[in-house]
Image (cartoon, rainbow, N blue to C red; front, side, top):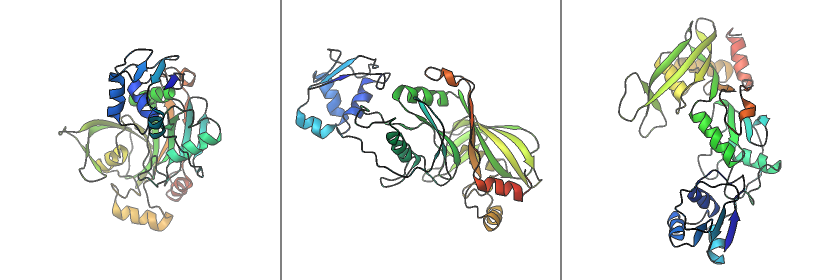
Length: 322
């Protein structure tokens, strides 16, 4: 039998979700069967599984030692080189500056990602102990494309992660990007449309009118400087769908320079030959905490920014955009 007393690190999540993380190797069906047959008790009673855990709650699991040995798989954190920069860190949050070329989450088992680097970094500085984490694993709360540089937010405990994810979802944290696009943009624009994933492709399209399965999107564009042929812009991502900024700008005839999926092929060749640019110029350079909830009240109205990668300044200088 194992007895677990819930601490602040595990509180505020569903019982069944917690059990799935704690008993990593246990089939979900067996967890629910354990609750039905009282082999898993919650505060001395038969649970339903949808209970929200509170500090000092007690869970008892009446499995055999052989079952525990099979079902409890300790998270192994591999030490890896850290390429991201730390923008800000406290007990609840880590704000990272992800470099170009690094995936936010790995795309195959042996891959390398920001998520791997974050775990390695947090273990090394003592913020994360997989042996005591009771199933919780810190992870990025927002994603950037491999070749989009910039700010990624990481929750360092379950409560912070849940609130941070909710604040991002409800747009209580504003996200801003820096980019260079083809063509002249003279005035601010609010772009609205519908986001449609292309079946069988890692591409999307933006339509003006609703089609089945489409999601509404909104992108706001602020021109900063133009040389007539290209425009340096700040982009506020109001909604956050896959490739939204890239597809939306392409849809209105102002594709991001260097973009291999949605860009202008002839223009891209120019930037490859002159600057060695092989990916889109897009950097998540700023976040603003607009409306904070506990435990992030202390971050109310805080703004965090990161510098754009070196190639951005080289292009801006070379194309008279600074």
